[in-house]
Image (cartoon, rainbow over all chains, first blue to last red; front, side):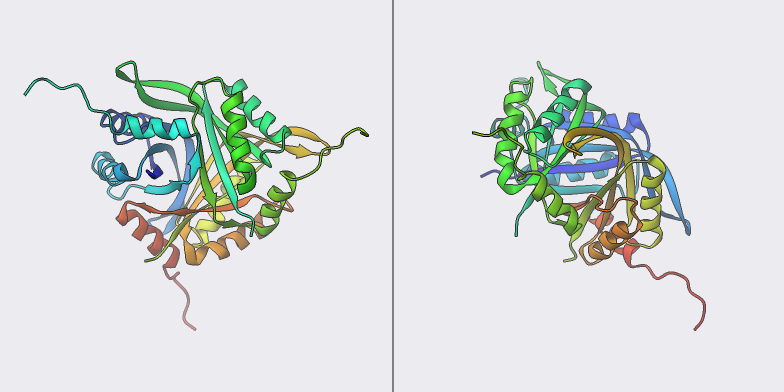
Length: 113
Length: 113
Length: 113
């Protein structure tokens, strides 16, 4: 069986989150992207605990596309060390999972060789 | 040990999201539902990458109720091929996990036969 | 390999969610916390299905810190039986995962013995 993954990232501007979502879907590295936010992120920075406004992006993809999606997000993301984490999808609506598979493996129209 | 699942769906109206959440909890197919949004969903549609406003619904349930919850969401959802995905809950507050188990297996009051 | 976990909780006030997020990061029980919301939570209470406004908090941590994080959230949370659930992180940006490991295992400055 094909395995499926949810992959997430976060970034400090809504427009950057939408752009990460659109570029990954455009490249068929994910079947869909979902931008959630604004959220409040908290972490240690410069010796103190700080808060920042961010947006979360959730992607659905197949296991065999996950590595390429991670690479895409690392390259396209404005941060040096962006959050990119994966969790396994263990089940769901079979027709929806098939749609993820199809959307991430569809051939693009192309001009004749 | 009983296993636990987080099950999620998304839909294009806040009222529909709340209704999916309430109907699943009412039927004790999930211990709770959480509606998050609005979110921005991006996917290929009609030959181009499109954005749409949606709401995410997150459910907590047991492994033995997950299939019935998926079927409920498929039947109650307005889309032909709704997003329904499951991820495994691998731990947590033991008292909260017990509450999920109890809420999804409680007998409803019923009239005498 | 070190394993990584996403741990989540929810609470009925934005300020309480931010405080849970900050206190866990301050104690280095998680590398970051993310507050999402408001969300609409639905559950059975007092014999009927009820809705309440809540905020979700998502933490990233290592497997060896997850139990201490769960205990911290149980102790610091205003509810008797708070939601605390864990899901496994199965991959991601290697540099980000290393950052989670470092942030949750960094020595605090301390005074001489």
